[in-house]
Length: 269
Ligand SMILES: [Zn+2]
Image (cartoon, rainbow, N blue to C red; front, side, top):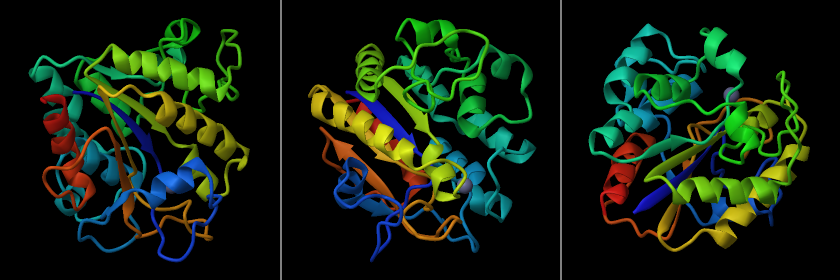
């Protein structure tokens, strides 16, 4: 089955609070209807994006492998793990059509080699074509903030509604076996570094997708570590959500390192 994954950075499930997430919001309901899964993987300290995303997209316990939680950008050790075990390469070796739906700026992809996230390394190592402004203008990519509001590149890109961005992502998902969209403003909002107005954009975008996704596409939403679900401004050790629509789990999933295999399983159905 075709799969659309929406990866939300820094979204956990707290026992007695929803933190910055409004209770009756779409994101709040997604969390309520999710399976809580572990993101700490037996390593002390607060989980971080570098290791969390490596474990999630590579199906390994990268925290344990490097004995710590590593901040956003992968170092050489994590890059080697991503090169060898990443989900995109695994799917492509099974002749699956893969798309990373986020649009990059041409400048970032060519010049900014230091600030490359796990998903960027996964895209490059698997020789998946990174989407850029041209794709965004043709509605064949989605900007990381959903509505193109924060785009600061050299080309004039019109602002679109969250619903239009959702429609664009659903179109992309219908043409690929596996489509990934990464949203990291949730983590930035949790750290107090971004306006909470983006939650409304995210909720409208998610609502459009949940309402209109067709039955032959599985929707999977998950995260790398907690943050926005608590009142503080740091990450949390809370479990993260595994939300699925149009699919019932066959095998139990307990932690983020099992998501890669789950996706491979779903796409081979
Ligand atoms: Zn963070």
